[in-house]
Image 1 (cartoon, helix red, strand yellow):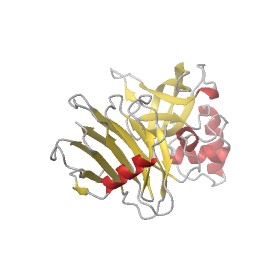
Image 2 (cartoon, one colour):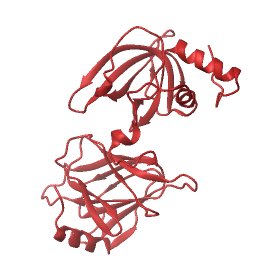
Image 3 (cartoon, helix red, strand yellow):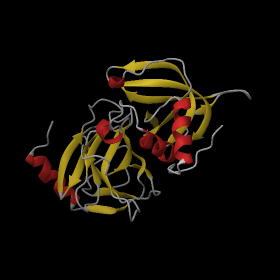
Length: 290
């Protein structure tokens, strides 16, 4: 579905009447569409300064413009991904590029599907939400999480952007870098694997004896003093993940509160690679050996 030229004109005219910036913290915003006069043509505007966070707009009315201005001087983030809440109802989402609005998603889309787009040059990323015409807004909530990704890929597709070359084994240098820079690094075994044909993903359920690092609490400690760490890791369905015996070192990235599998060698193979690199002084970081 694509917006018509009249949509561009109507939405662009709304951009000319922004309100002052709405209250928000650096990463997240929650507000209401009922803060202005019923017939006002003003646009609520929000400015966020983080590379990830969430927006929740209850009782959506007229329009909301979310400007993403991460306070980073050295890192260029050129791909933006948003993931709507399951309760997303009441608005269409547009991406603002060079003064024009391009339709990204409508409220009838698949829940929790990730949508990505690229920014160009030095443009400030902006997400424009237009409330759907409705008589009863009491049960409408427009919400999504956002992430700004580094210049990892020229593809706007989420899976291609953050899961490059996911199914192939990592070489030695990729493995050494993974344990230094991954969002999570855990040692454990695979308890079970489930497959989701609709999302084209597999969910690997891991029981971990040790969590070396994690960013957002995907892995939780079980009950009792001897309880193991447990957590799910996503991967692409095409990687044909399956349960099996073995002690693995799982690494990867975290996006929208989910862990995505990166390098996952058997632990004994990792030890061999790491010890050889340390002996030759080629290890990019120190890793705690058990």
